[in-house]
Length: 272
Image (tube, rainbow, N blue to C red; front, side):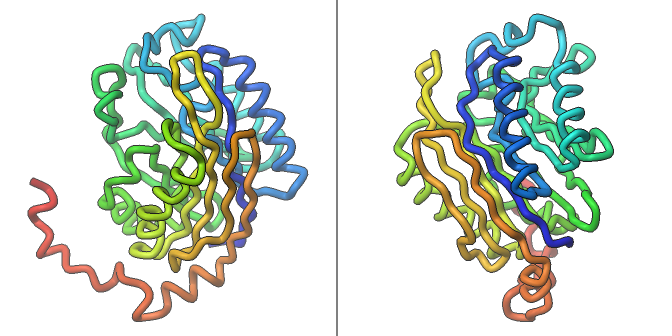
């Protein structure tokens, strides 16, 4: 892994206002770039807004290719890795809840949410692949909101070599402090048990569908300790410096890194 400066954005994303949301993303990308960030992560469905009603009406055009192209160009221009979420249609398939991963050299990947919440299952199509993405010497995993409640995903990503797990949210209800406390109950375990950095951020503000998103962002070390946090009702960027030496220290310690001591021969019931 490389030493990295990571930016996590709490953003108000208006459902259906794709151009306006892309303009806000561009402004945040420029701010993150000026602060020396190597990676900037936006919330789930930050480009399109979060909707449970008629996601096919989000775009004037029949697919999401144009929005993805805009994000890729932003990443190229700013010379950083950009992760932003949108409703994706591709070759007649979808809609997927997708996180775009783009870097200085272009598109790195598209992560489609594999575990949909009960409210999303009848509206969106689930992705079928868990993977990690590479930037320099760093491997990145992505989970989207509800997926963070499935420990198996984090372990699979760690086994695939992930150094950092990014967990963008569109998680409504409750206030910011309550949401932060909720996250710290399970996200710290994802970091500690798997020896990985974790970054999470949420949308912020009200939407026309009645969702209220409390702005929360957090960065955790591979020892499960809190490195940085942000709560509030306004758009903001959380910055955190990730030291590769911290990851190395955890993974070289026989009592702090648990992945090598797994007994997968005993875990058969997990797959049934």
